[in-house]
Length: 94
Image 1: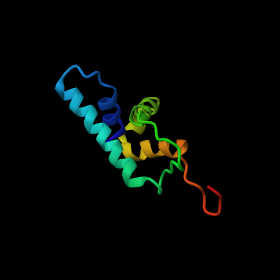
Image 2: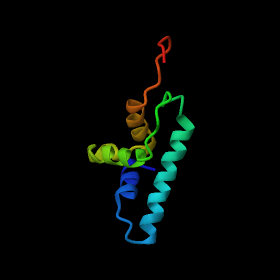
Image 3: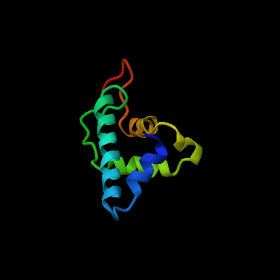
Image 4: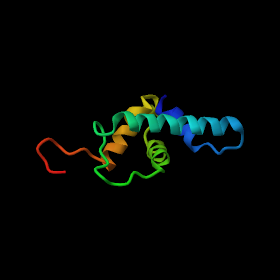
């Protein structure tokens, strides 16, 4: 999924079943991405993880130049999430 597709699917108003399905797909994509990378690319370190994280990722991606949205939504989202929930650097205390 590209960043452009992720943003389109997350911010579309659910006027019909297709828009709702696309939003659910994008949210599932984000859930799988987060589940597969927790502790490696991002670390909540005991902090609660906001359930609005998919929407926040889409809002931040919308601010990027269009050419950046042609890349992987995964890399764009992980870049944002890792800033909110950074993993400790080796040798640092959690």
